[in-house]
Length: 123
Image (tube, rainbow, N blue to C red; front, side, top):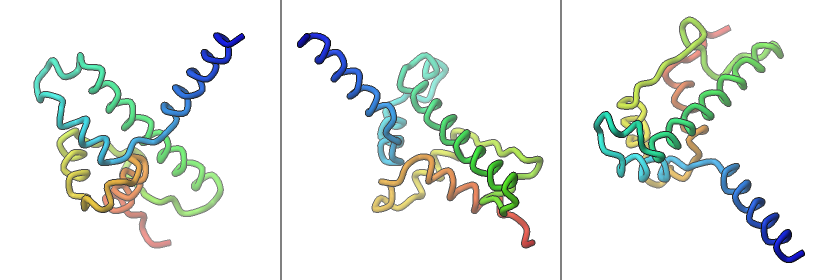
């Protein structure tokens, strides 16, 4: 019985950790440890950061689609309905965030960046 409780407790802890949003500071710290070479894509750290950006992008994209479907003005309006971001641009943007604000989530940072980069025309 104790083993089952231990396994359930560990699983809950792992799930809670995975569900927590990564902050910009955590992202930058992890990114600074990754070498800038072709082998970087083989590293688990790199894949974790890519997944974080993918999740953030999907989240803000879904929010945008939901706003449009509800007849509200979306937070950002990229040309062609889709925005692309290079790794260099992303790191430059995150590094430009003042250290005091780097406790925001990667998703919130992406949301703010896209709203600034792709503003919607006035209605």
